[in-house]
Length: 215
Ligand code: GTB
Image 1 (tube, helix red, strand yellow):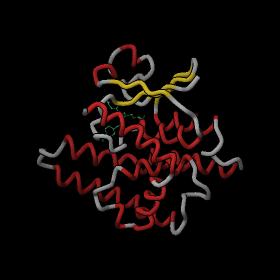
Image 2: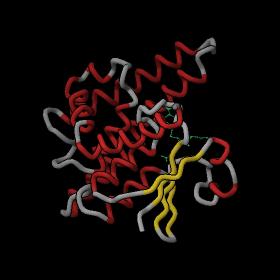
Image 3: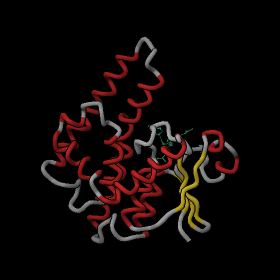
């Protein structure tokens, strides 16, 4: 039986692929695993039925037989462990790829996500400009370090891995900020991820949900 994931019935990003079901869809597409999607309203996400799957009442979740998971990083890791294509076979290379998964979610994503939240929720605060500046300083520091590491490589550590998949989804959130373009190798890295056929299929699938909800 195909796994089922959950996603926004009507994503606030208007189909731009910024919600975290995108990374799960992309991982499933990379490994060639078909999947079903259950769409949820904000209200349904907070109801007991969904909270049995996701204690924090969010998307995405992942159900496969009697296994239910939440946390996009854990879901991508599960998919990468069960299928070939997202983690190398060599034990050390695999451990390094997993390290990059954590780096994407624990080191690079937090200031990027905080900046997006600040731009939505804190715009009217008297300290907004100062906070935005501090967050952008943190982001620039991470991007500089990441750019130096990537150098002229295609991917973070050899072949494309789940670490790259997560990192690209994290960096995409900076589209339109101009910060990625300060590092042409990072902008090219994100474009390389977005050019993958599996990425394109995942993106179109999540966009179709928004298009259908808006028609
Ligand atoms: N750490 C969890 C994970 O990685 O799975 C975080 C899950 C999470 O933040 N889910 C969000 C959610 O369900 C959707 S992805 N929010 C509803 C709620 O908490 O009530 C975050 C997100 C939301 C909106 C945009 N956007 O509009 O651009 C982008 C990303």
